[in-house]
Length: 192
Image (cartoon, rainbow, N blue to C red; front, side, top):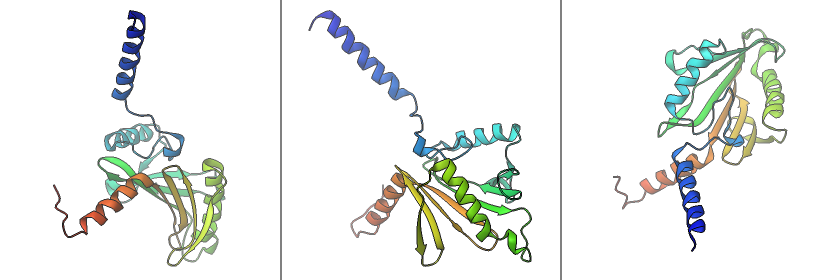
């Protein structure tokens, strides 16, 4: 191999090594909202929340440090509260449950019940995440709209009279957790 070829191979190897040192950028299918994404490191989540709070995009929601709230004023028929907080596995976002409710919700205000809000949230999700949500009738949750893009699954359903629930899940992590659980059920399993 002449010296030019050796030099080019060297540059390619150095470039590949340098690329591995930097974190992988999230793909479009990892994206959630407000710059959050599946696989985001726990500390990065908190740092990003701090920045969004400074910009007055989010606030601390009810429930102390385990609830983030965003008020949506101009997107739906009336003001809506969006609350979220992720589930972390290995200090990275594995799942992001999100609840939506009309600010004007009350048991006697049937026009502000979750069944009406689900239609509005679904239309918004179709604009943001794509129009190809599918519907299944779940035995306990009722109508569940879902979409799978690569490793990201989005489920959207009525949680109760007040709340619409969305759940963003990293399917690769979910598969790994299921496999680890099944392995732990075998008689010869010995955890490290």
